[in-house]
Amino acid sequence: MHEFSLATEIVEIVKKSALNAGKEKVTAIQLEIGEISGVEEPALMTALDSLTENTIMQNAVIAVDRPKGMARCKECQTQFEMNDLFELCPNCNSYFKDIVSGKEFNILSIEAE
Image 1 (cartoon, rainbow, N blue to C red):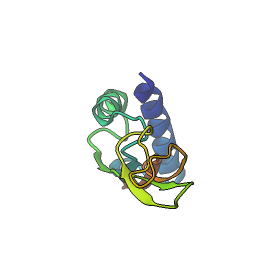
Image 2: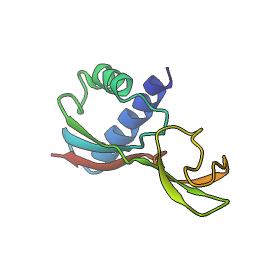
Image 3: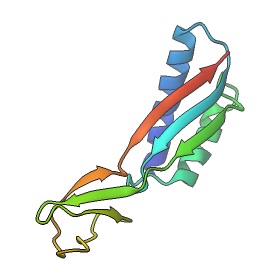
């Protein structure tokens, strides 16, 4: 389960950022996890819950933005929504595409006091 590794990194980054800013408690975290990133949100949240217990992040509200998967066909330039990485272009059935969005995995903001 790679979500535990991702959660560990999130916790380390958030704690370090808060402590460097002289804060004692993290109250909210805004994450961005693309729909085709391969990250299972429930597993990530479970890992975050266990890793933040008894830390400055305990009880922080974690909100998640979920950008849709979007691609642009390299053959016909059609931009289309995709639910997985193996979808064909709906216009020309080509497999060749550039991912425009949906693979993001970012910490957008941290609120602390």
